[in-house]
Length: 212
Image (tube, rainbow, N blue to C red; front, side):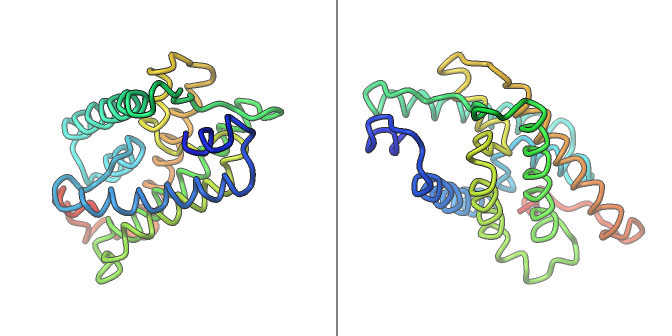
């Protein structure tokens, strides 16, 4: 929205994509950090789903988190519309020449990278001191993924991020991609990390405050 304001709704440029990736990386770093000791700082239904698949969070808590995440996104978009004097919070969309199948693969791969990073730096019982850098590592992988996929489908990786703008603008074209892709990618990452890197015989249920 800031880019659109500065460029009078001009086309996205490489510099604009870099600015967006940095903004997302830094904001997510802070969001995860400030929420880590309270709720685990998920802020993403796909991350919550990945933690659920790996047995780190209960189904009931997952459902509550999803409701909170979606409501937070909608409220944020409404506040943005109010604060910017009615500027549109555009829904995520596919770029020209990018099909739903292409975007689905992108979202699966990018979310796999995100949730794998969450597991490696935050959920793995063997993480040790590496857990200290979990929030910034998570922010960095999201920023990197936006640089890679932003020009193709917006690089959501987060159903809540896509849901709020879709509700406020009431635009639902290909919206399913931004749910199916992240959830599939998160599930694959959770299964891969649990099966290959966390020993089931020594794995202990982590408290929710330790999710990350």
